[in-house]
Length: 399
Image 1: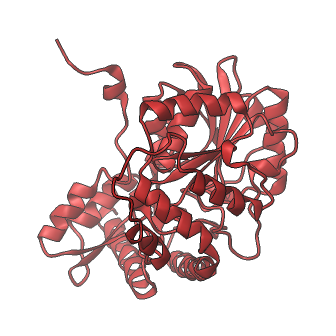
Image 2: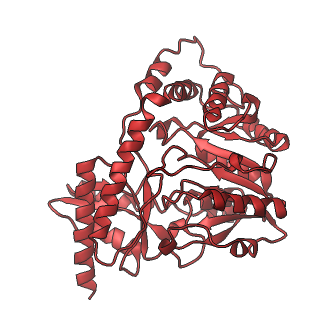
Image 3: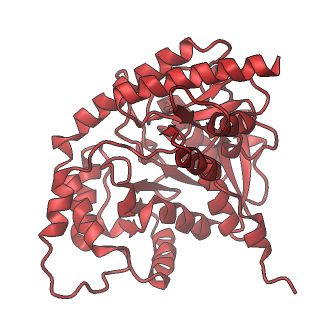
C-alpha cells in the first residue's frame, strides 16, 4: 500500500526554489551565485522592529488570541485608514504570514473541486495553495506584450462556470510588476457583482508603485463591501520575510468567522513577531519612502540592462520588485540550470526563476524568466551583465 495522498502527489514544487540544489553545487565549486530568483530583499529590517521585540518583557511567552493581538489589529486599522480603507480591528485577522492568509481565504470561500479565476502569470505558490485546498485554478491569460494587463471583460466572463467561487488578483503584481488601473479594478468589481463572486485581493506590494502611479485597493471599489477581502503581509514592506506575519481584512462577517475557526485550529500567530510588526507599522513613515526609492533605482537598472540583451523583451515594471522577461530561448529551465552548471564569468553566475511555474496553462512561460531585483546597485549590474553574457554563449552553442 502506498502511503501518500493524491494531494501530496499533486502538490507542485516551487519554481523559485526547485533549482536551489544546482545553485548549492555551484557555490560548493567556489562560484558566487547572484540570486535574482527569489523575492528576498537585502534591505535591512528597520531597527524599530528589532527594538520592539527586544523590549518585550513578559515572563511567559504565552498563547495569544487566534485572530492576533488586539494592539496589532488596531495599528493595522490605523495604517489602512491612511489609504482611505476603513476597517475596524474586529475586521482584521492576523495570519502566520501572507501564505496562511491566502490558504485560509481560499478554504473559506471554496470547497474541494470549486474554481478560482486568477490572471496568469501569478505568484507561483497560488498553485500550491490551491492544491492544498483542493481548489482548481482557472487562468485568465495575459501577455508580456501588453504589460500583463487584464484582457477584455468577455475573456474573463467566459471562464466563469457554476463551480466558480471567486477571483484572486495581485496588484502590484508578483511576478510581473504590473499595477492594475482603476478601470481594470472597476471591471473586476462589475464582474464580481454580476456573477455573485468573491474577490481575494493580494495587496502585499501596496506601497511599491513607481512613476507617479497609484495603487487601487479592492476596498476602493464601490459595492464590494461584502464580497471581498484584502490579503497582506509585512514580509516585503518591512523587509522581514522570516517574521511570518500577515493579515486578512474583510467586512464580510461570515467570511471572518470562517477564517477565525481555521485560526483557532492552528492556535495563534507568533507573538514576538506581532510586536515587531506593530512597531513597523507605527514607524513606517521613517523608512518607506527610502525603500521605494531604492527599488525604483533597481527597477531602472534591470530594465535598462534588459534593453541590451538581444532578443529579450519586457515592459517597464510599474510596481513591486519583479519583472517577467521573454528571452530568445526554447526552455528557460534548461537555460537557468546551464547557467548554474556550465557557465561562470570570473567565478560568478546569475540565477533567475523559470517563468513556466508562474502559469497554470501547460506550456506557457517556457521562454520567460522572472527577475527579482533585490540586490544592491553594483551587484545587480554585475548580475545582469553575467546574465547577458551567459545568454549569448548559450545561444551560440545551440546555433
